[in-house]
Image (cartoon, rainbow, N blue to C red; front, side, top):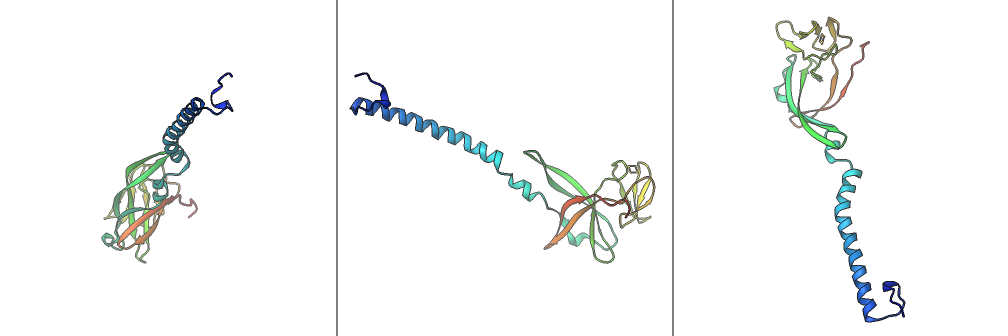
Length: 173
Ligand code: FES
């Protein structure tokens, strides 16, 4: 009778040994494929934990904020670009308004994106690029800026100020 390996229905020690090797080879192949493929599948299908955690970042201690005195806070924020997550330095101008509300502004001028600064003597935010001027409440006082300063969501946890998503300001506000 012709030997057809594992498909042979005749039970003999030789075909049993061959069948065992074939099954063992397939099993090892499956284990190696799973070992290599599972991490790739998890990487592709499960969103990175950092993406969920990057919604809120600690900007600094609330205790450093005095009413009516803007503070430029520097912190690190995770940036998610596709599947690449990188940590980058960010800043925000944070103001504790006289009523006690804490507001965090994007450090970018709403005209053409220059960095503005706080001028204590004038009690105004001034952008040197085209002389836009913003009040402590973020509203445009002078210059070509088309809308108030953009704001980050804020919340306080313990002693820390946390910043969330950036919200674009309303031009009519
Ligand atoms: S970029 Fe600020 S005024 Fe033009």
